[in-house]
Structures are given as structure tokens and as C-alpha cells.
Image (tube, rainbow, N blue to C red; front, side):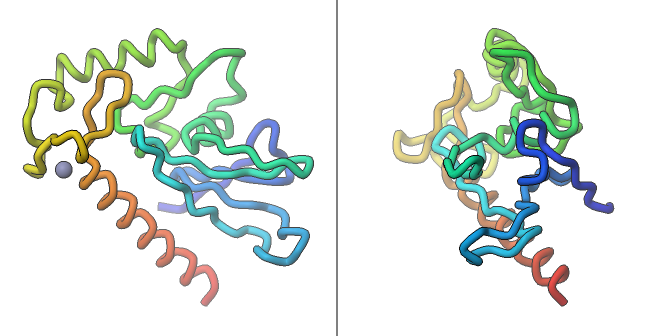
Length: 170
Ligand SMILES: [Zn+2]
């Protein structure tokens, strides 16, 4: 699958989002620290979302990757709109998994996931059998997310990103 890059409304000429849910800078860093077309490494927020820090007009702002991909592929949101994950996996940021909706709809998604797929709400262990202890649980609008699985996912994600980066350089 070819990775398609699109400019992000509000960040034109600065950052782009891809069909694989990645974000890259289009401009080289003014102090030469990072080259142009440098793919950003997101941080995993405690609620399971991936965030990146973007610079605009000399200021740094931390924004959810899902918002940026959704804006690039589905257009800028109306005020107050949130990016919804159709499969309820907050780290799955491919455009087909994202759409704009209201905060109420976003909460409803989580509630339905809890009811229909039993998104771990009443479970003592995740699908891979890690215990939902206090330390191992992210809570996100009614969802329970396994920290161990999230960390593994982030690690695999970073590894796949390094592979791609190396390929691009070679
Ligand atoms: Zn787990």
C-alpha cells in the first residue's frame, strides 16, 4: 500500500498527514535539528491517544494525531467537533477509521463499544490476558485500555516507523 501524504488544514506548508496515520514536517527545522519530510514520533497519552508537538508561528502545540489525520483527509472540523475512531481503538489513526462528530457522539461510541464488544468494561483481563489492575489500566470515556498492550503497540508502531525511515534514506 502506497502511503499518501496530504497537507493539514491550518498547517499548510508546515506539516502533512498520511494515509497510514503518520505526521511529517514539510519544512526543515530552522536550527537544522530536523530535516524536511521528517516523520514525527508521537507520544502515547495516558488515555490511549497518540499526540505530536507541532510548531506554528514559533509556538509549540500538542495535538492528537487523529485530529490532524481527520482534518487532512476529511476537511477541517466545525467548532467543537471531535475526531471519532470508528473501531474505538484510539491509536488506529488511518483516515478510514476516523470521522468528525460531536463530543456526545464520541462518548456514545465508547459506551456502545462497552456494550457491544464489551470493551473491557466488566473484564478482569484484556484479550491478551493482562490483568486490569489500577496500574495497568487507562480509562478513556468509559473504555478500559490495557497499558501493557498499548505500550507494545506503541513499540511496534515505532519499530515500523524506523523501518520506513531507513527505507526512505537508503
Ligand atoms: Zn493487555
